[in-house]
Image (cartoon, rainbow, N blue to C red):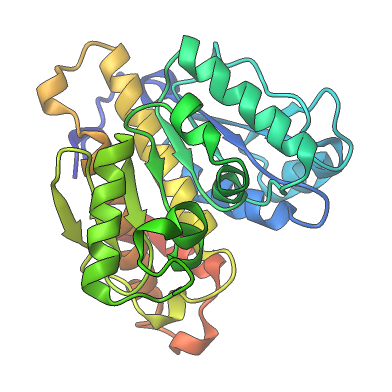
Amino acid sequence: MPDFLVNRDPDSHKGHYGHALLVAGSFGKMGAAVLAAKACLRSGVGLLTVHVPRCGVEIMQTAVPEAMLSIDAGGECLVQCPPDLNRYDAIAVGPGLGTDSMSFSAFRLLLNQLRQQPLPLVVDADGLNLLSMHKGMLMEYLPHMSILTPHAREFDRLWSRHLEPPEELFATSARRSSAVLQMAQEKNIVLIHKGHRSLIASPDGHYSYNSTGNAGMATAGSGDVLTGILLGLSTQCEAQRRHGVRESLLPTPYEIARMGAFLHGKSSDLAVEKQAMCTLMASDIVDNLKYAIE
């Protein structure tokens, strides 16, 4: 584990651990934003702002009182306007966002801002669905070294042409792994292909399989928790860089992805030591994250 997670300077303050931005939620899907926000905070981030539509304000302020809110300027039920990025160290987009055309427009504007002001970016859930619906955004807008976290179906919607034939959803393990590695290098991004022993791939050709986790994680909201963990780790890393920590001492986006996947799975493993896998909920993973980081 990096030093900023396990050995905190007694004289440090929350600014040393970064300010994260989570863009998430829409009418009927605010639970995804809640889960990601709680996981981000439990991962050690100093400050978290969640950008939500107006319908999500009371839910977020009640469920996650530790988070600050950025209230969308145009959206009652879904995000329509991207927030200003000046205050943040890293950003995650996707949990519960919806795939309406206005969410797409806001996402495109947000990615365009990132071209002018690069920040570590995590994309999951409806963020991936929006990318798959508008594939040109990948080449034109997606920042280098972004972390994307597709499961098999999301990966196929994005890059099915690499699976030969494209309509085969669950390709052989070797062929699917090859496609994941190819896309990480071609798009210069970090990929976590979620599943049993998730595959983490780096643009430089490095890859690894995650060793933690269990079948209980096949439950609603599990991916939102991973998004929050990755956002928390990315934010802290960027804040440490901003405060002068040497680059060689900080994890790369690929290492952050590996660490996030490991902690996500380990938290679930700790949870099922006390309960049956079939009873596992995503909130149980969040609750056990405090025991997984050591």
